[in-house]
Amino acid sequence: MKPMPPADTQDLQGGSEIQLYAKRKKVYPQSVSGTFRNIKWTIMALTLGVYYLLPFVRWDRGPNAPDQAVLIDFPARRFYFFFIEIWPQEVYYLTGLLILAAMALFLMNAVAGRLWCGYMCPQTVWTDLFYAVERLVEGDRRDRIKLDKEGWSLHKLGERVAKHGLWLLIAWWTGGAWVLYFADAPTLVKNLATGTAPFSAYLWIGILTATTYVFAGHMREQVCTYMCPWPRIQAALTDEWALNVTYRTDRGEPRMSLKQAQKAEALGERAGDCIDCLQCVAVCPTGIDIRDGAQLECIQCGLCIDACDTVMDKVGRPRGLIAYDNDMNRLHREAGEPEVYKPIRSRTIIYAGIIVLVSAIMAFALFNRTTAGIAVIHDRNPLFVTLQDGSIRNGFTARLINKELVQRHYAIWVEGIEGARVEAVGIPPDLKGHPIVSVRPDTTQEVRLLVYAPAGTELDESTPITFMIEDVKTGERDSVNDNFKAPAR
Image (cartoon, rainbow, N blue to C red; front, side, top):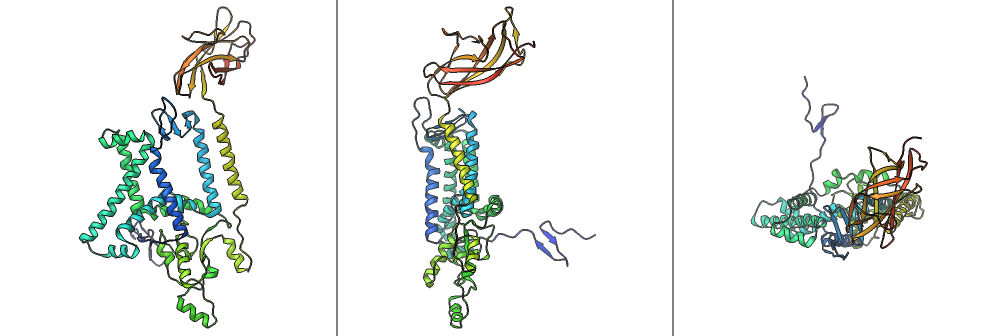
């Protein structure tokens, strides 16, 4: 019996075998300067600055409230974002934010491909930062390649210890900054330093330190190529009008060295603008050759554009051999037609329209929401009780909500049945017969309610009623609907 081939190989006709998994080739991106590199530096500084410093920003919400501008308070079940406070009942705002994030991602893709991947993705930002540290310690591309090939020495050991030490420091602060969003930042920093912080804080700092160090320092482009699903999704969402980093083959081919190009031109032969210097490959953080066309590994960061423009300047040729371009323009240039760009088209209008619509709905709901609330649950057994005087009683459990930072007093009554009255167990009514329930600041209060329908009232087996509450001081109201149960006629 013929033995089975190894798990990482596959038999082909003729008995030859191929490897199913390619061994990783380490990438040594070269430093580059230019427009897109400056854009990436700016975005990196802004995003990292916000991430690391935002937990320390203060926001005065008054007494009895945390003063951290952005805080996810699990014990109190609140999310604070500057002047916005989200309760668990308002999780639909999270749904809206997820829709906005998805539509923004789709819109960026429709306009200019993988803008998110190339400039704003956390994997890109932190990998860029780790590369900057690596260049600072070990030097640029050639120096790092040379260092890797050298044998171990005190010089190499010192540089490696310095590099990995700085990486671990950045990774540790990345994990530390994350946990600061879940507690008061200055207090937690003090507790972490004195060893009195909760175990969960140290655990998550450790986890995030490890993942940041591994992903940004070691896995790097492999996260984008093999782990992230977005390149596959993005390829299905793009169209012929989306701008992507493109090598303009109609201008660059046939590629040849500068000397060969001069000889070809002297003989009246065509010579492309590409001088085959490989600078676009040297600066690429994923190690691909953009001249091979659209590739899954390309994150559209634009660094190859900067490298190519620099070379074109040196050889006296026009910039833009590599540029953000769409598929249609290559056909237009080949046909001698002017280039056409369509950032505004049905696809982008739909995405932008959804963003505006969802944003408007969320803003309307946010600025018109009440800070008082009521929810009720009808008793399951018994559904109703017929009293000696012929009146019918239903029992309910109500939960009153106070989202303000001061104690409030709610009057409660019911509508929908003529002459119906409501009692709150253990709470006396006011002069109007409405029970007044006090609710402490920023909390909820459960109360037992009994609703009475007068004797002789014509009722269906299930009659809709509305529970009303009103803040006796401000007049703010809220309501909830339920059903009053009665015996069949």
